[in-house]
Length: 150
Image 1: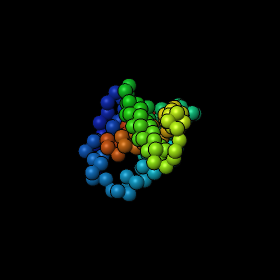
Image 2 (image 1 turned 60 degrees about the horizontal axis):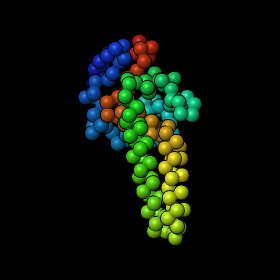
Image 3 (image 1 turned 135 degrees about the horizontal axis):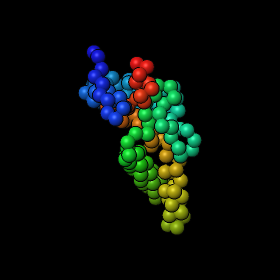
Image 4 (image 1 turned 90 degrees about the horizontal axis):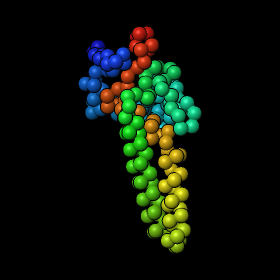
């Protein structure tokens, strides 16, 4: 089956119908999510998405898919980071509440430290997971250079 491609503002997008998450092979989904845990490109798995701490590459050096897209695309990664932080804080809170006899002040200090540190530690992974989900649902666009080579 030939892929339908749409070009918008010089960026090539795969037809969204060919990337329906429900029609994907479960192995493909697991491979893509595994790549995101390793901070690798969700498409090819060869190149890292990280340029330096707290700075992601614009595109994959290997396959050319774009990581940093239109303005506002990053909001999903921020949302993933916030939700993961809240869930992690709740898990720590209930673990401390049920398994220890720490004072309220000590519990608060621990939770505050987690609330500050976890989003920083999880930053790259939230971006990577967001890119993987976007790739699985609608596909990531390629740079013009890579599109011309195909």
